[in-house]
Image 1 (tube, rainbow, N blue to C red):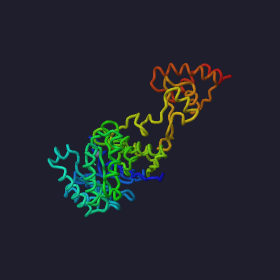
Image 2: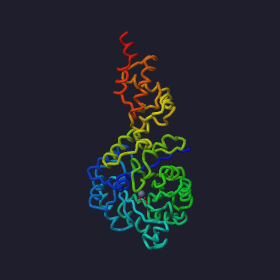
Image 3: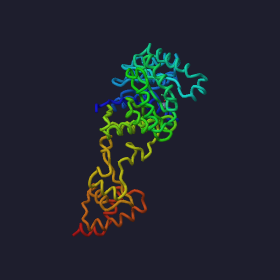
Length: 391
Ligand code: KIV
Ligand code: ZN
């Protein structure tokens, strides 16, 4: 099967920044944009230029510094939005305007007080107008997850006729099941006239914890771009996490779906975004959480010490994490204690280990995690250790 390239569209600076309290200033956005380039993302959605003078300035400044990635600005299907985005993107080497409109019956009725055919006209007009400024125009059908497939296909056809290069199929409310979202992409691949002139993009939200699974189903069924954010930050429960989709594709090479991401930059990028946005990553977060490569049960630690692959499917170095961690707790066994003791300079005999292990368990029952200085203390205060060392 031929290898296919999946474009990674990072929207940390737009959808990610919509998280309450995560507002970034231009300087912070520039630092993150530079790191996103180092990470190797294909598209950086830099902001929503008409939304505020600060966002306009950030998109303009990012357009100036980004060398390789496409820089994208969001708009509604509104002429003024498109003009302002085009202005902010003027200095970008590869500018993209991302314009669109809600297509579900709920959006058509309650947001626009409109009807299906009027929405198709507005979609066509918005893409045509954006095309008069830039070659690369992405169209989003907001709430596509809850949009009837047959109607969605007609909207996509209109956007392609107007010149859209990318068709974004957002599961805006995070409603779809993976099978449903995959079927939607398959339906569009098979039923949209002119689909070969554009690529489909997955933009999934995490309201039911399915954003990553939905994006993967999307690319399995023919989409060629994933829209995602670092650490999965984004509106409400967040967006698809970049680190998750990238590592899923990497760890499942038989899917023949590749990205341009330099995975060794993942951890550094996660830390940088977390620091600037002031949002700590949960310890059990896949790939980038502090426990993602930490092993605490005795059975697992024993296996890890014998061979890392017994309990890890990713080499932590592949995502820029220095090493796996053997965390010493009351659930740890002798193997883990001996391993950690050796790391800090004690090559223990069996007799010494038996003696120290009992003290270690007493200590560990009182303390949640036993640190290196605690091990020094336990060993240096052990009778058996002292006797053997003085013999
Ligand atoms: O979730 C969504 O539908 C969006 C669009 C604006 C692309 O973020
Ligand atoms: Zn979104």
